[in-house]
Length: 91
Image 1 (tube, one colour):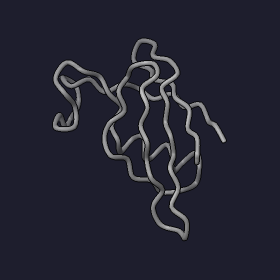
Image 2: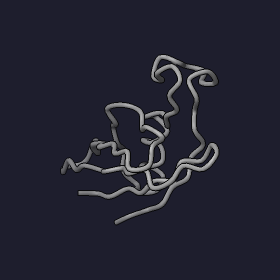
Image 3: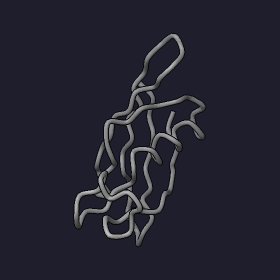
Image 4: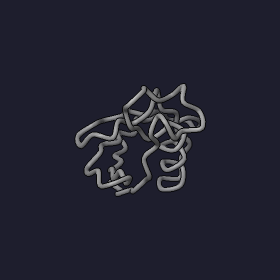
């Protein structure tokens, strides 16, 4: 199952909590990716870090709760201005 999601980027200089961002690098916060997984796939997830805003960047998150633990692979498909588009695949 794949879903295409667009999220605004958070830049290190703009983020309210800069500890999850590296200086000068733009990312989508792990919490936002987890929230999108929950909204679009209907499962809670835990991601190990932020998603880099580079085409082809991959983040593997784990579902939490429920009987079966699964991996959600998030892959960046495009970055335009401050929008990051990515797909989610449940394995």
